[in-house]
Length: 404
Length: 146
Ligand SMILES: Cc1ncc(COP(=O)(O)O)c(C=O)c1O
Image (cartoon, rainbow over all chains, first blue to last red; front, side):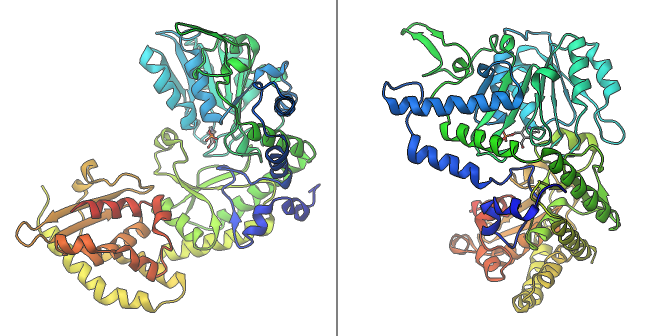
C-alpha cells in the first residue's frame, strides 16, 4: 500500500465524529475530505455572488471561480472543450436531460435504445418517461451465468441497430467493472451514440473521454468525494448541440420575447437557472484532491479489501455471494440463505456497521437474478483491513443470531 | 376470503406474547438477547395464508414486504389485526406494536401511542428513523384504521 491510511482518514472529519462506526455504504455516498469542505466554505464566506449575471467585480470573481471549476472537470476527463462539461444536480438529473434532449433530434418512433440488465433506475426510468411513450423501444443486454455483462449477447443486440447505447461503467449492485472499451468500440462500429453511466466508475479509474471515444459520460459529485447536488453531464460538442433543453429559464437563453426565445450557446443552454456554484467548486476541489492521491494505490487497496472480505465470507457457510472479487471496483453483495437482507442489515446496524439492504435502485437486475435483494458492502480508499475483520466478526454474530 | 378466526387466533397469540415475552424483553439489557426473542415472535402467530399475500393488503414503503389485515367489530368498535412480513425483525417489531393496540376500541385507539414500547425496550430509538424498514408505514396504517 503506497499511502498512509491513518493520515488519509484524518483528512475526513466525518470519521472523528463517528469513531464507533464502520462505514461500508460508500457506493451510496462517499465522505468528504477537509479540502472539499474548505473550498466550499471559502466560496460562501469570500466569493459568493451570482455568476454570469451581475456587472460588479464580485460577480466576476465568482464567475471566474465557477468557470475554473468547469475547467478542472474538463481536464480531469480530458474533454476537448470545457463547454462539453454541463453541470447537473447529479447523475439522475443528467440522465433526464440527456434522454429528454435526445428525443426528437436523435430518437424517433421506431428507434431502439440498448441498456444492460445491471442498470441503475437512473438509466432506466428516464427512458420510460421521455422515450418509450414516443415509440422508442428498449432492449436489454442479459447477464452471463456468472452475473457479468454478456459481450456476446451485446454484439448480437447491436445488430438491431440501436441509435443509443447506454451502459453503466461500474455496476452499483454487484461492483463489476464493465468492459467499457469494448462496449464503446462495438457501439461505435454499429453506428450508435454511446453513453456511459459513470456514477460508480468515476471514482475507480481515470477516464479519458477522448481516448475512450465515448459520446456522453455522466457522474455525481457526491460519489467522487465531492458535495451532493452537483454532477456532470459530459458530451461531445456535436451531440450536446443536438440536445433539447429540459429546463428553460434564466441563463440558458439569448433573447426572450413573450412569444418565443432563442437559446444560449453551450454549456449555458443546458444549465437553466442559478447553478450550484458552491457545489461545482466543491467538486473541483474533490478532483484536485484526488489528483494528489495515488489512484493506483487506491485501486490496489480497494481490491485487497474486497479479496479479504470475500475470503472471510466464504468461511461463513450459508452466505450466498452475488458478486465475485475479480474486476470488482469494491462492492460485495450477498445474502444469507432463506433470510431477508433487511434482517441481516439490521443486525449489522446494531453493531454499528453501515451497509445497505434491498435492491439498490436496480429492481430489474434482481428480477433477472431471481433474488429478493441483497446486503451490499461497498468499500472506499479510507476503509481498513481492521474494519474488514471487525465486519466479518459482526457478520458471523448476525448469522449466528439468525440461525437460532 | 379472509377466514374470520385469523383475527381471534391472532388476538390470542398477541395476548400470550404480551404476558410471556414483554416482561422478558423488559428485563434484558443486551441487544443480542432482545433480538433473539424479537426474531422468534413471528412463530407465535397463527399461519397467515399465502393467498392473503395480496397487493391490497401490502403496506407500501417497506424494504421488506408487509401485509396487514384489519377488522373492526361493528358492535364493540374494537379493532383487530393480523400481520405477516417476509423479514423477521420487522415482523417482531410490528407484533410488539400490535400487542399495544389489538382489541382497542376506536376511542382507545385514537389515544394510543404503541410506538413508545419500542423506545422503552430500546429497540427503535426514533420511530421516524424506521422509514426504511417499513415500521413507520405499518404504524401509520394501523392508525389510519380509525
Ligand atoms: C450506477 C449509478 N447510476 C446512477 C446513480 C444515480 O446517482 P444520483 O443519485 O447521484 O443521481 C447511482 C447512484 O446511486 C448509481 O450507482
